Image (cartoon, rainbow, N blue to C red):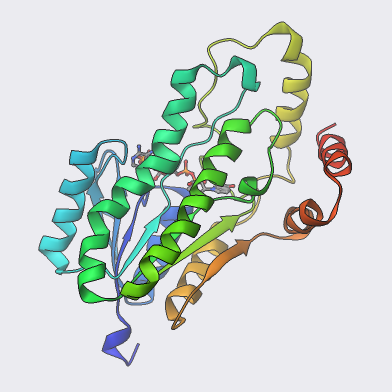
Length: 269
Ligand SMILES: NC(=O)c1ccc[n+]([C@@H]2O[C@H](COP(=O)([O-])OP(=O)(O)OC[C@H]3O[C@@H](n4cnc5c(N)ncnc54)[C@H](OP(=O)(O)O)[C@@H]3O)[C@@H](O)[C@H]2O)c1
């Protein structure tokens, strides 16, 4: 890292686990000044700092961002990575659970943006990376509210990109396929599952728990984020996915909806 101008101050929400942790590790190993977040912060990791932040709590977000600004003076890159999964037949998801997932996956990212963007606009430079999901492209059976939350974040980012362009702030979304993290165990679940859905739900979740899913190293997402940070004008939707998962995005665009949905259900049979 010979060019000191290249060293960035990076805030990664959800740096305590999975994809966020992989991003923190990679970027700090590359010489960047990295701050990750976790709701509870215990021992500090090597190479980067974890600050306490709950993205569902505006005061906590502001405190966390203020802590980073007090220490580093600026934030060049924010990676909105913290997020939750949710599973269950859509009909069984209570409105409270639905709001919980939207509050984290969409409004949580928004809270962080509101705290970080004034500084970026003032300095007329910055990069916002939203970690969404391939699930943003289609409704996943029995994970409808997850798809909805990530699709909403995609549209939010699209609007934000146009609003922030005059200020030199770039907005990118990264859509990961399935990676080996804690996401599946932490998914929100409905209090009860209706008998009418039980068999299909168990089958789909059984396939999802199988070896082909959630097997890849989350560092792949970190490599992509690192690459985006080196670009002069990173843009648009970026994919971190392979094989049939990556292909699914193209098929969704090309195939009639009925055929795509039939293929999706065949995959989960
Ligand atoms: N793994 C995949 O296959 C996959 C695929 C597509 C997209 N994604 C997305 O990638 C992101 C990271 O997920 P992951 O797979 O790495 O899952 P993970 O291992 O469960 O990590 C989730 C992270 O989010 C943080 N978090 C959750 N709720 C939070 C809150 N209210 N405030 C602050 N932090 C919060 C957690 O921190 P604490 O619990 O320590 O507070 C944790 O660091 C998510 O947005 C997820 O939707 C994952």
